Length: 393
Ligand SMILES: Cc1cc2nc3c(=O)[nH]c(=O)nc-3n(C[C@H](O)[C@H](O)[C@H](O)COP(=O)(O)OP(=O)(O)OC[C@H]3O[C@@H](n4cnc5c(N)ncnc54)[C@H](O)[C@@H]3O)c2cc1C
Image (tube, rainbow, N blue to C red; front, side):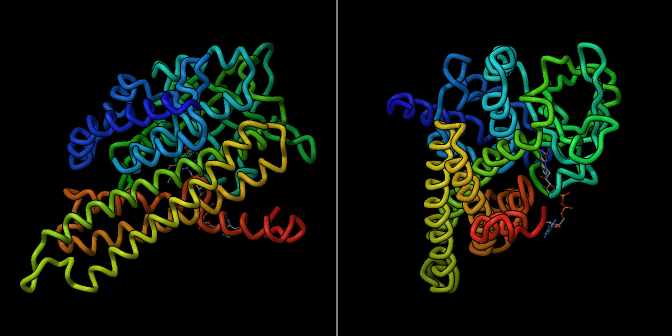
C-alpha cells in the first residue's frame, strides 16, 4: 500500500475512533448495542479496509490493517470485534476463496456497509474442534439446502450474509468433507437470535442462528465443494491477527490511562506514581505492550507475505504459526495489562464508568474466541515438533 494511502487510512481510523468514543461510552454504560459503530464506519469509509480498491475497499495490506485494528481496539474489544466479523472473517474468505462473481456481488456492497457479514463455524457441540459440526447441506436443483445451528457468532444477529460451513448429508468416511457457503440471511428458514447473557462487549452483537432447509444458490458455494475446512482454517489466521492487533490497542489504552491516573491521584501525601509498587504495574504494562507490538508486527508482515503469494504453502504455514504466537501472547498480555490498570485505579477501576474497567471485562474473551489459549499452544508446539507429534488430529 502506498505511504500516503496508508497514512490517510490511519488518519480516517483515528477520526472515526474519536467521533465514536463518547457514543460508545454511553452505549456501554447502558448495556446496549451501538449502531454508530457501523454508521460512522460508513461515513469514514472503513468497512472494507483490506478489500481491493477495484471492489470498493481501501486496499490495505495486512500490516496497515493490523495498525488500524490496534487503534480501533483502544475504543474497546466490542468495536474491534465488529470489524473482525465484517472484515477479518467476513470479507476475507470471500476475497481469498471467492470467484469473480462472488467478489462483485459481496465485496463492494459490504465495503459500503449495505451488507453486514459474519462467519459461522462454531456450533453448540463443535467449538475447538469444528470437524465435530452437525450442520449439513444437500443439493436441490440449482441450490443447496442447509440445516443446522451456529452458535456464538460475532454479528450473528445483525448479519445480512454469513460465511457458513456444513457437511454433505448422508456421506461418511473420506467422502464427508465440509463445504463453505455464502449464506444470505433473508427468509423464514433462517432464524437469528441475539445472545445477551455476556459479561462484557455489550455494544457489539453476538448471536446464534438456525437454518432449516435454508436455500443457498449454487453460485454461493465458496471455493470448491469439500474445501470448507481449508477455507475455515485460512480465515482463522486473519481473525487471529485481528484479535492480536485489537489486544495491542487495549494494552496501549490501559497504559495511557494508568499513566495519567497515577500521575494525578494522591495518596499518602504524594502522587501514587511515586509509589514503587505502582511503578511496577506501569513497567509490566509497558512490557506487555512492547512484546505484543513486536509479535503483532512480525505476524502481520508474515501474513502480508502470505497474502501476496496465496499458493505458497511455506509462507502460509509461517503466517499461521506467527499469528498463533501473536494471538496467544497479546491476548494474555492484554488481560494482564487491563488487570494491572484496574489495580492502579483502585476502586474506581472496578467500574464500567472507567475505560480500564471496561477493557478488563471485554478482553477476557480474546483468550477464547478464534482459537482458545490451549489450542494456540498446541498449534505452536506441533509446528515446532512436526505433524507426527500433533496432540490431536
Ligand atoms: C463473544 C464470542 C464471539 C465469537 N465469535 C465467533 C464467530 O464470529 N464465529 C465463530 O464461528 N465462532 C465464534 N465464537 C466461538 C469461539 O470461537 C469458540 O467459543 C471457541 O473456539 C471455543 O470453543 P467452545 O466455546 O466450544 O469451547 P470448547 O471447544 O468446548 O473448549 C472448552 C475448553 O476445552 C479446551 N480444549 C478443547 N479441546 C482441547 C484439546 N484438544 N486440548 C486441550 N484443551 C482443549 C479449550 O481450550 C477450552 O479451554 C465466539 C465466541 C465468543 C465467546
